[in-house]
Image (cartoon, rainbow, N blue to C red; front, side, top):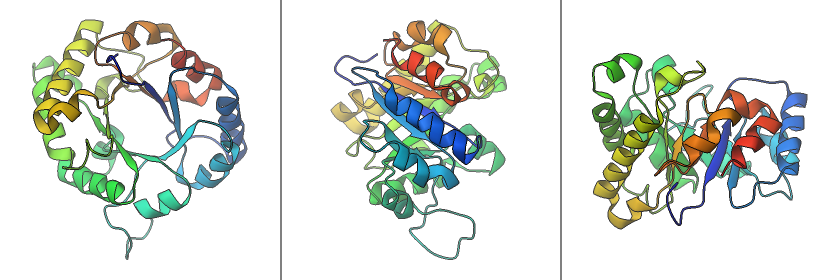
Length: 248
């Protein structure tokens, strides 16, 4: 972790769960304790309002999984950042590898969405990460540096934006990079943030994601510049999610 930076443990529920399951999960997370750590849950769009209700009077923040770059307009099926803010969301995940792959989102699109999030007073959680082929070719750090340069808008640091590093090949596979690889990538991300934003870049939170679970959380979260986690599958069980959050 980075000295002086409060960790963030974020749950990305993706496209999972019934309404009843979402409410039960939110209540269980809200009832847990993780001293010294910020907690964030990002349910599917239809569950945002009931989950917001389940989180009332708790310290757990609400986030969304995506937003459109426009504040309004003829964009059937999309959701604008101001709409998310109206529902009580404080964060929004942008540029997740599943969005980049499934919906063809480029760095420029992610940057435009991040700008929209900032305009709506939402904190963008911008995801970056390499494919297995890029890792094997020795291109991982260069790929992530390019994604950062293209995806982060000028106001990102001033708003306390968050970067989440998720090696694409580790998401949902049970496989993780070595601790040395994670530490090296987070150090490179920190250097790129400092290059882009100066001193402010030294305190931005960098999360690790990709098969982070209770069994490996303590070792990974102790690495330099790992300031929390973006949790997928393990966030769908409150006990696992909270176990990761208390691994510091």
